[in-house]
Image (cartoon, rainbow, N blue to C red; front, top):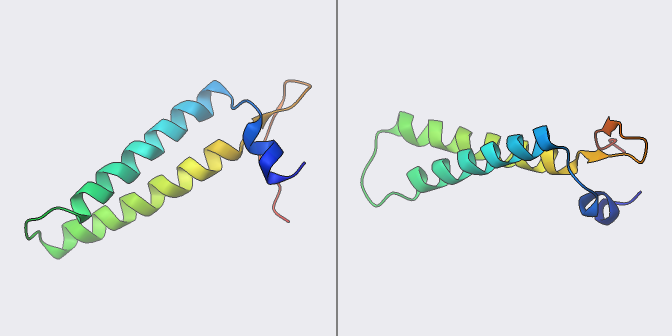
Length: 78
């Protein structure tokens, strides 16, 4: 199964919820980073970590698919 086929298959409900949380984290972090006001460095650092973590959680959650047998499998690293 290639990456295109994997992303077209259905995602389990739990991972859809996790994906949405990841999107929210990435969006919140990006909004804080792009804020037009001056913020302390620690807040910018935390926002950067939120953005990266949210992006990773979203990508991994989207790659989880339901097999034909109904079992959940994660993307195999090649």
